[in-house]
Length: 325
Image (cartoon, rainbow, N blue to C red; front, side, top):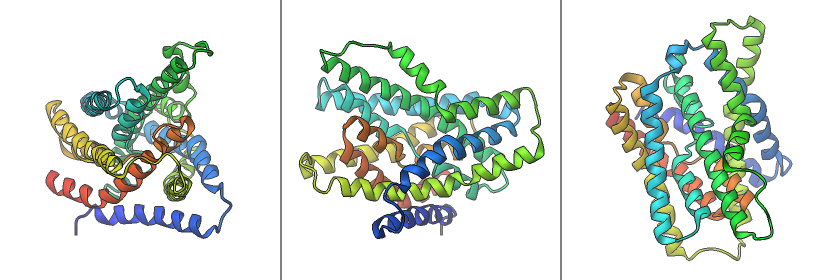
């Protein structure tokens, strides 16, 4: 059995448990919101902070890894935007959401526990996932701006109150993940050792991020599918199948293939190379569904792409890991 299947099944089991609890209505219906807020504002910033603070700055500033992974995301993003503009000319919001579905992998809530189980006792696993998550946050901010600008353009009565650059800047500096990461990088740069009890507290809180997030993802996916079973705006089945297939082809195969080529080109080898390709091959993050629902753009497609991608990753991730070894 592929070594990646054990942690992958553990990850999927936690998501399945969340789905089951949501289906049986054991917990209050908005439990997923509370869990997501806890993870987003408390637990995930804590693990990013402590993971980066305890990593030597030269290991964080892996410029080849950052460049290779970023370019793989960028090229995938541009490819999907181009195809979307051909099929839906003038719909910048659809193009942005589709591109986010194919580039914003679940590097935080699936990537961190998966790499931690694959590479136990290796700080590099958390570092690689942290770098990938930070890069994903930047893409998320760009998509947020794209949708905002499109909707403002379509609303002639509303004047633009903020510039695109300001929207991106505010989105990043107010993001708790970015704040936690920035503090961690700063502490690493000045080689500041945290007070031991504080370090233990941050790590213990941070380690709750993965199970809580995975449990919440399971709950969110059940709610997402339930909310759109009676939707009056369902796309035609053939169109839906084609779109879901394209999204997951780009996310699960094209992006990791580009990551493989580009990370190799930048001279990345060993564990960081394998981790970079695996992180690029992760399915779409549940955060994409939350953004789609907020702006009512490709809501059902986003929800189903996440569910399908997560299921397909049971097959694709072991295949990719076998190829890498």
